[in-house]
Amino acid sequence: MKTSVYTTIVTIAIISLLGSSFVHSQTATYNDVAVIINSNSATSEEIGLYFAGKRSIHAENIIRISAPVTEEIDSLQFEQLRAQVESYLITNNLVNSINYLVTTKGVPLKVKRFDALRSSSVESELTLILGAYSMSIGSSGRFTSPYYRQRNNFTREQYGIYLVTRLDGYTVADVKGLIDRSDVIDTHLPESGKFVFDQDPGWNTAAPYLNTRMQIAADTLINRTMNVTLDKTDTYLVNQQNVNGYVGWGTNDKHTSFQGRLNFTWNPGAIAETYVSTSGRTFSAPAVYGQSLIADIISEGVTAAKGYVYEPYSSAMADVSILFDLYTEGYTVAESYYSASPFLSWMDVVIGDPKFRLIGTRLPADAVASGDHQNADALPVELVSLSAQMVNGSVQLLWKTATEVNNSGFEVERRAMDNGQLKIDNWSKEGFVEGNGTTNAPKEYSFVDNTVTGGKYSYRLKQIDRNGTFTYSSIISINTPVREHSFALGQNYPNPFNPATTITFAVKNAEQTTVKVYSMTGQEVATLFNDVAQPGQIYTIPFNGKNLASGTYIYTLRSASRNEVRKMNLMK
Image 1: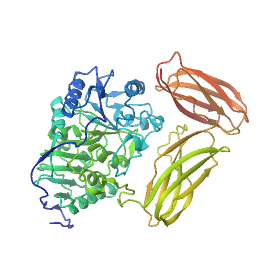
Image 2: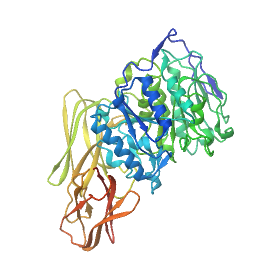
Image 3: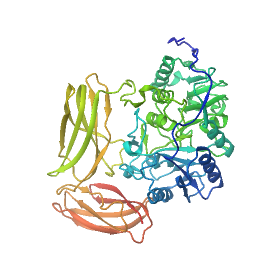
Image 4: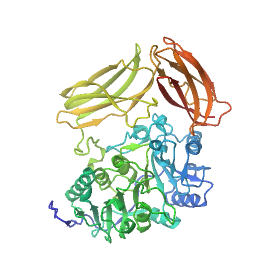
């Protein structure tokens, strides 16, 4: 029975789907999962080996690192952690065969940087290692995920990132319980189970879209004949039974209970998202309370949840209309949360087995690519290639489509990588190329960007249907040479380097200019240029890091009127 009438609390009865039987959590193996263990933490070792044993993960897929046992680390400590993970993957030829990384309690949780907008979770940073997006790690804050709003089976080969989840809770028993709950699942949802969406109308002015997404999620599940409770009142729901999934405001609910405690009973496979900005700030007990914590619902019995280690802003919250749509179709925990979450190199952390599925089979729509979450149907343009090349000092983009239906055209968007401005999501529209409407014949397109001044740029296409629906292409990047008569700092080459590299720059006016190198903690390690630079000349200066430790370094170009900043990686 279905209904779309909502007044106060609405409960819709579930229709029985299948007879009772059980399947293992995955039809596939865990050969594409690597587990990260901190050798300095007995807890990390115990949890990592327990998970590996439960999922038959081979010993060569266990990455042991030496890292602090504190939950919070600084930039330098993260770079040391990162280098160990990258080195293991490279040395053991696992870079391209691993799709999922799993960290464990005892591995550092969050990275605090001198700029709060560059602080992040360890897991969100690890998504970008060893790929085309690695230069965005710790650079300019949040980075738009190439897997955001996708409805495809995830692979690193296609998307250029890893999906990273964490196994954590207050105690080892809490974490083992979470692992056990995602070991064996029923072939259908429990008949008594329900999804609980607890709106707070007090936020309908400041952040109405978060409540709206609950409504869309509820409608989706109702259409699938699932049991849904949607609360539109001021009541803060507690003591709910047999919960399959939950969304609520936690201590941000204006009528919350003490510490936002839910006191739910959860069915195996239940997931949750709470609109709480620091819900994943700690998994250590006893917790110091301010805002509510997802560690509490893990101890109650949830199977997967998403939290935030610092203040991520409401735009970073998982789009629950996507999350529950995918999860109830049979997508994995990691696929569901990452498709629903816009940002990487940010404050998000997903807790749970990355490959666990709520149901053992996938509905037929699983191979369709989605665009705007308000219209999840596949957009009718099949893009088969996108490339960039330098032509006479400009960047030429070339792309091809196999078929098109009602294609209005393509907006070309550009982002300067590590350009010193430390902007967030600084995509700019560079032009528009008209589409071919509806056609079954292959079409070729091109666009020339003649405004580049030197350095690394990323490009993407925003394909727009004639009804206004849109989707983004994958992201491509290109290094461009520094131009004379411009103030520009080029990306060092080679990068990463060991131990020598070169840096190019140019200035627009004759003035006192410096080029300096700093550690990620802000300590100056070298001055490479300190003189009056002349316009019309491209300067090439060497840098040798033989006396420095492996890691990421910042180098700057400064004059009286301008400033440029870039990053480089020393890997010994």
